[in-house]
Length: 164
Image 1: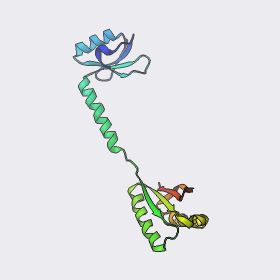
Image 2: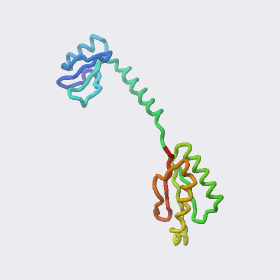
Image 3: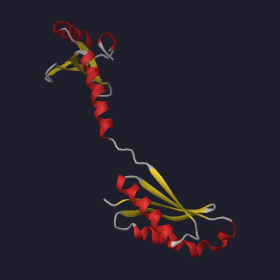
Image 4: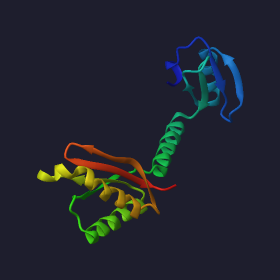
């Protein structure tokens, strides 16, 4: 809210250089803003009394947008990459899958390792759990198990994240 949009009984006013000007009515604050040829901008509406600042509104909006962009730039989104295995996977195939998962983890992504069961493989679920444990063991130098192996329908899943 700016200038005449401010309808509170009294507001705390902050000057252009950040000095406290005290608590006053919005009319008096507007008078000060006009004398300084700037806008009266409500920066903390939830405070008691609300805080308003004498500032150039265009410059204020520009600064807010710039700070938002800067915060977004520093943000890192973590993606979840999936590696699919089967219960009758060979050692070399498992090593290849481990290497691809290692690359994902080094980039900072989470890895979802899923062991898919088809047909009669469902009868040997308990003997296949060691495949996921071996997978986690091979990556234990750079990753930790975020979510332990769990059976969900026809697949057993486990999540790995980077060690910190």
